[in-house]
Image 1 (cartoon, rainbow, N blue to C red):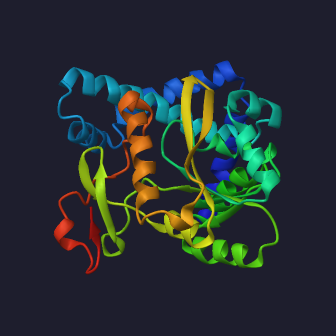
Image 2: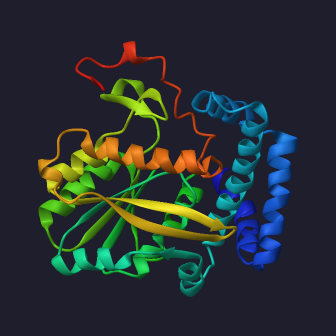
Length: 302
């Protein structure tokens, strides 16, 4: 059944990826209309999240942000599909890195990098970095149930040279890379989701609400002494993004515990408050906000 579904759907995805840009975004507008007005995809979750983190905003503003989010979400989803066939030059034109020279300095020094990322603006096109440095980029992702679509996602995210690793294997493979010490690595992890409650060993404020936070990227960076950066992506206009590598620390081994995670969240929070429509509000990021009492023994509540 999985193969049948994939066989039926993939030609449609390929066709969408080949559409001229004007038609491509016209199609995205159509998908937005269906998603927002007809199907109401996760509309309740999005509204609850927005009213939770922006209690001071009136309903009319919440609705404007919500509508803007759905428009952006549809663009971003289709842009991932566009990655099936987009050229290197077109990708570099539409997703620009403003301070690539900083990364090239670290490359010249032979220093590895841990890059914190977020579900903000465009994280799917961030692999454009792969074709502009000599780092072996390693992207961490959550495995998809349908093995054929999972293979497609891996192929899309790896087509510019990245190595793609599942969240289940990330700790093991990154540790092995650092032990081998056989090249330069840049690890990219989207770290703003909510961990399982039984793994929630650190709780801190995010958008003014106490929630559990992933620590894996910080632990790996500190263990290996990697430079830590946040890839701050901003949406300039439809189909165009600009990203900056923002330093979190270049001395991770000597950082206090949780410093990296807290700084990462504070930078992301500033972005969200500035332009909230570009954050992925359909995720249940705050679902454990009332569950501090269920935190595992030994968890830190900050």
